[in-house]
Amino acid sequence: MKIGILGNGFVATRLSELFERAGHDVRVGGRRGHISLEQAAEHGEIVVIAVHYHAVRDVLSPLKHLIAGKIVVDATNPLNDDWSPLLLGQETSGGEEIAKLVPGSSVVKAFNTIFATAMTKDAQDRSGHKITAFVAGGEDRAVATVAELAESAGFAPVTLNSLTTARYLEAMAHLNINLAIAQGGGTDAVFIYHRA
Image (tube, rainbow, N blue to C red; front, top):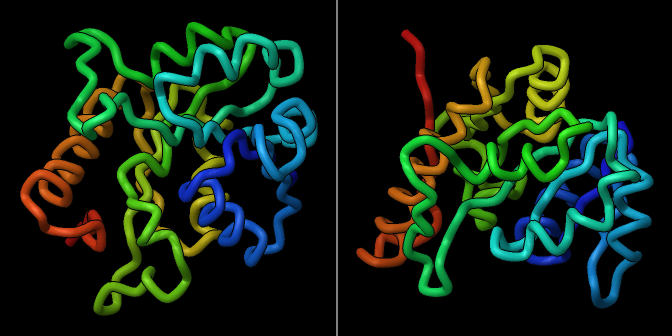
């Protein structure tokens, strides 16, 4: 698959390495040291948003025409500068707000519950279990495609058939961040969803 990643931080770098290892054609776009955001957006059949949530509106607004009709993966979490949750209300989520910004695209929430430190080949095997990558969206084709991407990158995808479930995934991420940062547990923790 042709993947365009918007952002050049830790998450973007780690995901790009996993995707490239899986044989995908990846371009990472950023404001410094990489190709432009426009070039990355144009390149990708799938476009991954890996910038800070507070920058999403500014990043996506000029790219709407380049990502219209494409699958857009929201890997962000609404956070304040101190890593505390940026509360958007009970009836929406960052994923749903992003979908409003790009109405011509198929938005899928994924990878937001995984710390960048766990996005490496060596970190993926957890006592014989793979890290769960939750994949949420309202369009079956888009969800299946992103689940396939996640599996190729070494994760165990669990699909959710509505973008509204991004609310739960963002809450899970907020919990994980609180345990890791506020309570000092560290960022090596992951979710393993095990069905008996």
